[in-house]
Length: 145
Image (cartoon, rainbow, N blue to C red):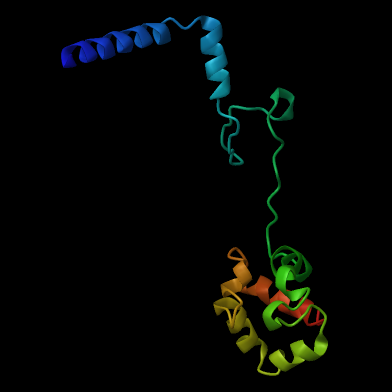
């Protein structure tokens, strides 16, 4: 009985392999279309296979050089907590609350932002923010910019 099961499995495997090998050109084209590459990262100055929007590609995105504004950092990373004062976070524009923190000095306030304080995670989860950008965001929230 065991030999019969092994033989049936072998025949089924051969039948399936034959069915897969007999894909038509149209079926192969559909398969390749489903698994084709959908994007490409191109670096300025290096050759790229796509030539842009005309052939279905995506236009280049300009990378901004230099520090981002405090308002931009606040909007993208800080507002989630500092807009409403989550867990005691000083609210954006609350000059009194920020003056209390800044009375220790900007260096100490920045150090707290970098390493995190209480429930605030390090860098407020803005891992791509420079120290200069964090300082700008602090100044923005404190109404000092």
